[in-house]
Length: 234
Image (cartoon, rainbow, N blue to C red; front, side):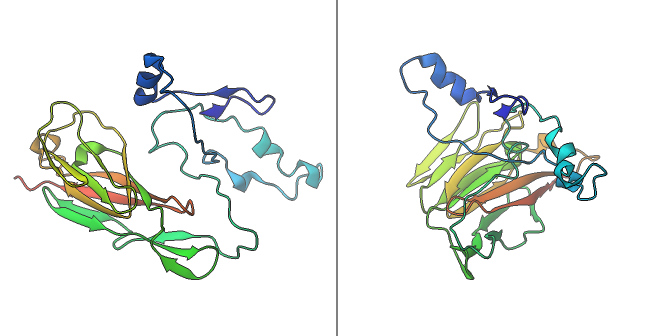
């Protein structure tokens, strides 16, 4: 959702497909329990301390910026969420993963990802967040399956016709999605298999790249890692 302008508190909210399904049931299952605030669309370089009309006008350009309307794609919205840190915090939490400059897999290859958060509790502690992480792949066509384990484990299946094998807290799906959709799973460790769908590639398009967004549930720390799948066909 997004504020329409800065002169009122009117809020423009767009429901996701799942939200619309719950609302249509009209049985009380649609209930907003959490929300987040962000400022991804704000360009703070426009803050002008040398404004000719005085310092009280330093933020004039920022305050008059048009805000983007709400969009339901989490891969493009809320990339800079506002977080609350404990009083006296001297360092901002941040996340690191192996190969954080980019994960590159061949079709069908499997990768395990275990994030570590630094400056947990505002000090120099580093480790895994107790409530885990939200792992979001922006384009789910590039994964064969995606599974998060630990904390609150969930598995995100493919859309459409499915052939599943259920084991403990993981679900493996082998069918294909033809629509690029962002998907999120929650846990401490992520396992992802690159797609085996040859139809996504061609001689002129031998690789595809999307983003894997990792967000710490305890701290709000966030990192976006490029995720590339290379075709194995010739």
